[in-house]
Image 1 (cartoon, one colour):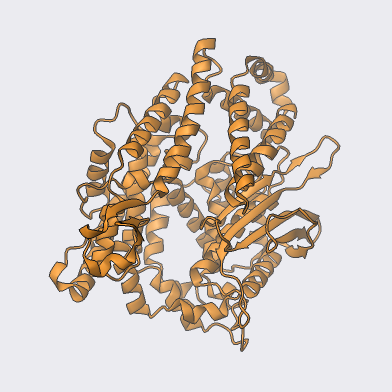
Image 2 (cartoon, one colour):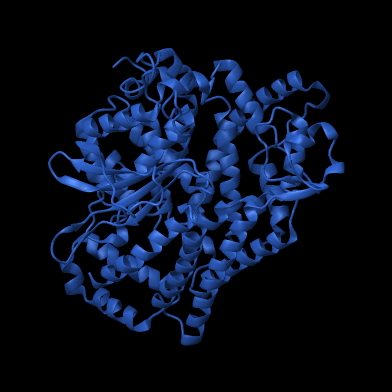
Length: 607
C-alpha cells in the first residue's frame, strides 16, 4: 500500500504534466509541464534504483507466509513493482546502477529529440520542382517547405515529390535514431536482457520477441496473396488514371486505395456527416453503455480555473447501482496549437484509499472535431465517429477498472492488451443495429439508411489486406531495430530489406522512412501491439457481441473478466476468462484474416 501511495503521488504529477505539455493552449504552461515531466522522470529513475526501497519489497516477496496470505492482485502489484526495480538494474553494483540511471535519462532526451525530428519539414530549392506543382507546398523565399507526404493529393507528381523530399535522410536525425537504439540495447543488456525487445515484452500478452516474430511472419504469409491482389487492383487504377507512369510506388498506396473505395462504393463523407452530429453520437454512446453496462453519462458544470479552454465538457460517469464511477473531460474541438492526434490521458488513477473510500479515476479524451456553425451543429465524418467510439473504449476501461492499486488502474496494463477495449468499440461503431439507434439527420430526423451503413462497412475491406501488410512491415521493422545489436546493417539498409520482404512495394533510393517513424518512441519493440489487440477484439466481438450487441449479460461478463482488472491481472488470463479458452498465435492470425473476408451483411441483420 505504501508503494502504491508513492506511485500515486508521482503519477498524479507525471500524468497531469504529460497531458498539459501536449494540450495546454498557453506555451508557458506547456514548457513548465515539459520541465516537470523531465524532473519527475529523473526522480522515478532514481527511486527505481533505490536499494533501501527495493530491500523492503524483496523481504516481503521472500516471506512465503505473507505472500501466501495476499490476494492475487496484491501479489501481482508487488511483483510489478519488483519488476520495475529489476529492469532499472537494482541488482547491479553502485557504479552500474548509476550507469543505468544515466542511460535512462539519456534515452528520455534522445526520445524527445527524435520525436521533434520526425515532424520537422524538409526544405528544397523551389527551382528543382516543376512550376505547376509548386503551389502545393509552403514557399519561404527561394525554398519550398515540405511538411508531410501529401498522401491524398490526386497529382501523382506531387505525391512523388513530397515522398522523396519529406523522407530525404537527415544526418542528425539518423545519428539520433542510431544512438537511441544503441542506448536502449546497452540498458537492456546492462540489466540482464538479451535485447531491448526482451526487456520491453516482459509481462505482455505476447511475452517475448520470438512469439511476436512468429505472429507477424504467420500473418504475413496469410496476407501475401490478398495483398498482391490489392496491389494489382491499385495498379489497374493507376494505369487508367496515369498511363505514362503506371508502376505502383509507395506514395500511391494510400491514394489509390481511397480512389478504389470511393469508386466502388461511392462513399462521400459529406453524405454521412449530417447523420452524425456530435449530440447524436454522444446519445448513441450513452444508450449503448446504458444497455450493455448500466452506465450513464451526465454533463457537469465546471468550476472557474478547472479547465484549460472554455469548450471543454466534463462528464460524470454514473452506474445505476454503484453511483459515481469517475469523470471524463472531453477536449473535442480544434484550436490553434492543439496537436491533431486523438488520444486518451489518465489524469488520476483509481485506487482504494486508506480510509476505505475509492479514489475516483479522472481522464481526458482529446479529439480534433470541427466547431459547430450558425447553421449546423458539429458534424462528424464516419472516420471521426469511429475515433470517438475508439477513445470512449479507453475511457470506459479507465472508469470501470476497480483496482485496489492505482499502479494498475484502467489502461495501465500491457500495451498489447491496452488497445483491446478501444478497438472493440470500433466493431460496435460499424454495426447497423448500434448505428441505427442514434444516426439521425440533424435537420429532418431521418435515420441513416441501412444500405449506406452496409456500403461503408464493405468499403473498409477494399485494400484492407494491403493496409494490414503495411502495418506488419512497420511492426517487423520495429522488432529488428530493437533486436540483436550491433545491427547487421544500417537502419536504412534494414528498412529496404524488410520493405521488400514484408511489404512488396519497392524501396525508393535516398529515402529513410524510419526517421519519421514516431512510434519508435512510445511503442519501441511494441508496434505489433495494435495488430494483436485487434485480433483479440475481433475474437471477443464475434464470440460475445456479434449475435446481440446489447446483450447485458455479455456486457457484465466483459466488465467482470476484462475491464475491471486494469493491469492487475495477467492479460492472457483476462482473455481466457472472456473467451473461455486460451487463444494460440494461429487463432490471432485467423481472427485478423477472417475479418478481411467477413461479409458485413451477417453483422447487419435487422434488430
